[in-house]
Image (cartoon, rainbow, N blue to C red):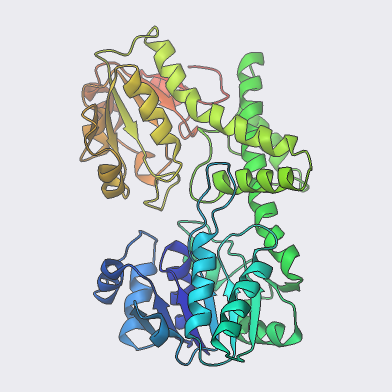
Amino acid sequence: MRVTVVGTGYVGLVTGTCLADMGNDVYCQDVAEEKIDKLEKGEMPIFEPGLAELVTRNHQDGRLRFTTDLAAALANAEVCFIAVGTPPDEDGSADRRHVFGVAKAIALRMQQPLVVVVKSTVPVGTCDQVRAVMMEELERRQAGHAVEVVSNPEFLKEGKAIEDFLRPDRIVVGVASATAADCMRRLYEPFVQNGHPLLVMDVRSSEMTKYAANVMLATRISLMNELATVCERVGADIMEVRRGIGTDRRIGMSFLYAGAGYGGSCFPKDVKALSRMAAEADCPADILDAVDKVNRHQKMLLANRVLKHFGGDARGRRVGLWGLAFKPMTDDIRESPALVIIKRLVEAGATISAYDPEAMDNARAYFAGVKQVELAKSPYDAAKDADALLLVTEWGVFRSLDFERLKALMKAPVIFDGRNQYERREMKRLGFSYHGIGRPAS
């Protein structure tokens, strides 16, 4: 099929590339000329395992093209994806200006019938508004092209996005006609050969499904973090509790890790956006508000514990920090717990030496001009002369380091493990003062 994807951010680039890899003719369009130029040269705007190789192969084979010219990208398209950002507004609601702007731009340039697929995460009712925006522009042009607007939320995990797209658990599409449903079935048929379902439903239920999924997962994380605090108070170990409840088939092990809180581009904004939607519908959303509150508290937990360890005074203290991305296998630092922790410690007078395997460029831009934040060249470099070391993101590279060497480099052998990555008894044996989340201190 002939496909156009508007927006070459995380979702758009992965979507276009994976569709091209299944033999479709794909144009990826973006207004950012620098980004398009880099993509033409094979330079990725994001780090995602396997993406660069997939982009290069499909671009060289002619199935994947990049342009800033929307009219050219739409010239022969059957399907057009809208995959632009919906950042949180000041009140927590999703900012849809880019979505509506793209919808109007498509209607201004389309020259044939088109199925428009909203891939962006949008509040319930947005697809109806997208169609209204497009019909108004088509009527102004006196163009009679048929338009179908489809909701097709993404369920991609950063770090495993290629695998998630090529071998999805399920694909959700919201349609208003049999024509749109047939189009989406044809497009996605190669991706459901694994027997997992293509779920066709009404548009508003599809839009809601995205928020419901993310809020459900965010709730599990926040609940485990709250339980971790209780465990510490009563002398239990949250890791043992996780085993005890995770083996219940009704619950399962996924998203039951206590830690420093969730971040990224999805969970924080989607929890807030759904809470805002509920408020606008005059519905109480006490659980959603509590999930967000617990997460904000959890991001401060490690920093506050470090300050308590220093007697409330971090002036003159040096703190090593491992992990800046909000999760492993990505360079994305949006809403990362590390940013909150660093800000709190810097305000208290500490100097931070931080390291991340992939997020250093983004961190360099974020902390530009902040003299108290140094970006280290290695995990050992970050720990050198540190009064304490914080693990914030559980990258594999941090799992099996030379801890004897680490202890010799540090001014004081104190580790605050924000992801419960290490065995506390082993840390004690090695001579570290070890502090996990929801676990007895060593």
